[in-house]
Amino acid sequence: MIKKILLSSDPVLRRQSKPVGKIDKKVLDLIKDLKDTLDVQKDPEGVGLAAPQIGKNLRIFVAKYKSFERVVINPEIIKIEPKSLSAKAARGKKEILEGCLSLPYYYGPLKRAGRVTIKYLDEKGKDITETFDGFQAQIIMHEIDHLEGILFIDHLLNEGEPLFKVEGDEWEEVELS
Ligand code: ZN
Image 1 (cartoon, rainbow, N blue to C red):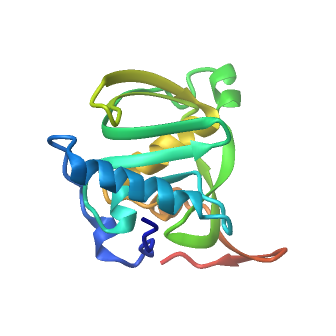
Image 2: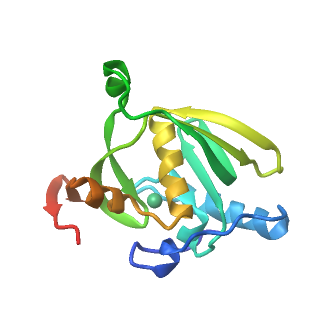
């Protein structure tokens, strides 16, 4: 079922989400709701959606970008590639504008590590350890943040980076507070 996506001011988005115990019908229904809700996000387009964004503080998210598709339950970060060990590593760390369905039409330049390895369960309860690079790593880290009650604007604030509001072709810098 398509659910309403909570906006960034909602306290549910600021809570730490609880681990999933048994992957039962309730959990599978929630995963279906996440997929259904993400699928219809076309303006702006979404590439990931975490359970707290539809009002459930459980450690589940879905990611979908072109042929890349994952259901991630109880993720644990095993390794994040160091930020700048060498010039080569630094070049690999791209700054891409990041956005969030809970803060539609706002984007900011976020420096995230280029590679992340996580351990998680898929929807069948299978234990998976997987490494993600580039944009996929960015999606994974953005969604894991949601499970911790963190929004991308928190990182922008910490790093003193600007936030932009986009309306049609117009970009306007906005104050973060
Ligand atoms: Zn988000």
